Length: 626
Image (cartoon, rainbow, N blue to C red):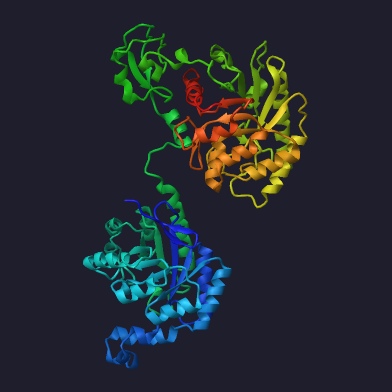
């Protein structure tokens, strides 16, 4: 069942959107405006979306005889009524608090307990969404009155029975306003064994956003509710649990509330989409620790493979051991040395390499290669080679000869497991980076003697840090200065756009520069450089920052002199095979109609099995190139 999000201003509340977190200040101000401001500060500092207070007209809520003489009623009224009278804020106080919340950039909410309170809120304040407490879930009169404001409602079910919840939801649906419902246990504090988070599953059948209003001790249950699908979390907040009042004991202190918000945001990231995807780190560990089907003995070309010819060994670069039986009875289409991993091509008995043709590829294309393997691709008639340098390549012999292909060189990104940052703020570190880059440029120039045209040199701008930089413009200036110090005559320098969450030997790194079209365009216009455009990096950045990928390519097309083409997904899955991510290649390659520069399919691990990943990508891309 598709659930339409609840809109509060420009915030969407519902499945697939960030959890809407309400800090329930309630009566915990104890009648003090100063303490109410402290609660707003605590909620804002914790990262809550909204802070909520309560408004009662006691004459509307309680019978006159109880208000006149609370001692005539049960003990709970003898305790509560005097506190409600003492803690009630003035209308001017609400005005002051709303203005203060606006300064703290947090949504200000007030929960009306009666119609006159609703009138006060509507006439005096600018509350964008109404919360209805669980005591009023069955109060059709009040629900109907609030609905006349045409504002969305968040309604708590804590004190309602099953049949009342069903009837209540049906009634609210007739009122014509969007709403969400909250699961709640209205004991203060609520015992863990009575909370029953599974009941949120039952509430989800009503087709509206479901959340959780908690009164338990601690933060674990509220965080767990998000993992179970809660779109809204409401918790009481206090500055002192020892204060007099009905809610303090079941409230969170400011640091506890902040820890809860942080935990919720972490769980949101961890929940995922319900589809199993291996991360790059997992794939690397799988390769290192997993196993492939390998030949136990030498298997000659033309031999019918039997079970006793096969075994499993690491690394996991070949067929999964789960597919071992598929190979039994297959006729080997090559000589397979003992210990060699078997591949998909061995299953089908033929390889893509035998059928691949570059004749119908309209763009100048080539594979990503290393010194040792580029000649293996000559049979596919590529127009170019892109050499990805490692730090060790700089000390090895450069290939020489006379080749008909153009050449592209990608600068090394690491030196002895240290990330090379051309925008480093450390002077000595940047000097070392410049020295390594100069050696790499010299390699490109030397390669140009054996290949056609002007060598192209791809360089990552850097500016990658563990935490977001407060001054990205300075990092971009440092990168420009690094470029200016390189002797690049005879080589075309091409900065490459970066992804938002790069992989740098593990860890959660942040890219600060060269991701978005306006920044990139301005840099290229001011410096006179062209660029290498990576479709996967760009897709991830657009996903992160809400930009349009087609618009980005259209704007940057005049500057693109080399393309890295790969699929991508989300904000961190880059270098995917074409069709395995979310990029619409028909749309994004349309603006590049007539493109006459160079490109490579930069598929991660595309070089394995004779470059099968690169060839497969080109087969996919043929239909989109114009």
